[in-house]
Image 1 (tube, protein in one colour):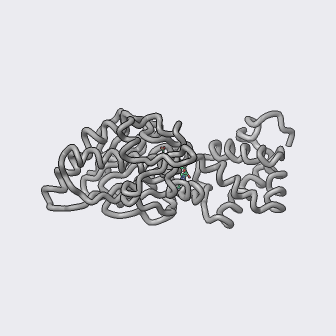
Image 2 (tube, rainbow, N blue to C red):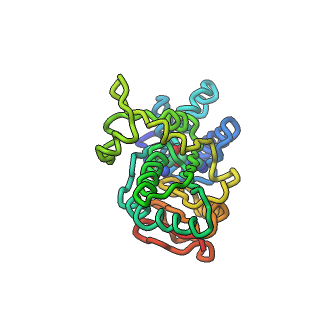
Image 3 (spheres, rainbow, N blue to C red):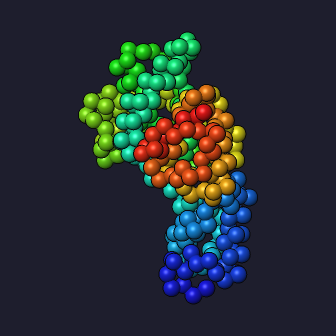
Length: 286
Ligand SMILES: C[S@@+](CC[C@H](N)C(=O)[O-])C[C@H]1O[C@@H](n2cnc3c(N)ncnc32)[C@H](O)[C@@H]1O
């Protein structure tokens, strides 16, 4: 294929041989790594595969397929390129503020009414861990303000094993902490000899990191609060519907789903969820 620029690969009328090679690459990722990207939006996927292709210094999907057949370890880089892990502590702070002010106190109140002693949270698509650690910090702070003592269990899941490994290590550069206040840094991090900031072991015990594919694995259960942000946008409408239906199953009665600023709520099943905060894309299970 004549390569005049990355946008050529996003055209609908890709030459047949290129289309075949693209589909074969997706199929091979599924066969080798068990991750099925066929239900991801084609343009997003192609854009990311083109980045992987350029990393390997080839100029067409056909050449890339050949390269991957000869260098199967290249699938690691490709998977990395597809599962962009961009994230940060307290990403979209206004969303965290809404959850801090309106949702955690409500969950606490409802739990006390039924004499329950634990709160279960799920960060689905947690990348390198900043989101679940931010949740752990925020919930600990609210509980201490309310002088309440609950067992907090945060499940943090992703399909990207390398990202999960970093998340579990919980060691971050100073610039990653820009949304944190000084007192939060001193309470929840320890600066090490290399000038990196390691998450406090007490905070870590609240989080259970595990590999989980939200598009094919069984959902978790009895969850009070789900955060799933900046992931679903890459899925086809059909897959989005399926994932939201799974979140409905995962939530405890009256649980909350924080969908994130980039997600469209157009296809939300109205018998499953009510909109709790449109601005912050927060839904409540009906
Ligand atoms: C852009 S990051 C978002 C991280 C965090 N939720 C945030 O908003 O800052 C997207 C993450 O979703 C993960 N992901 C993509 N598809 C997934 C799937 N089917 N199941 C679980 N995680 C997935 C990627 O590996 C990546 O780490």
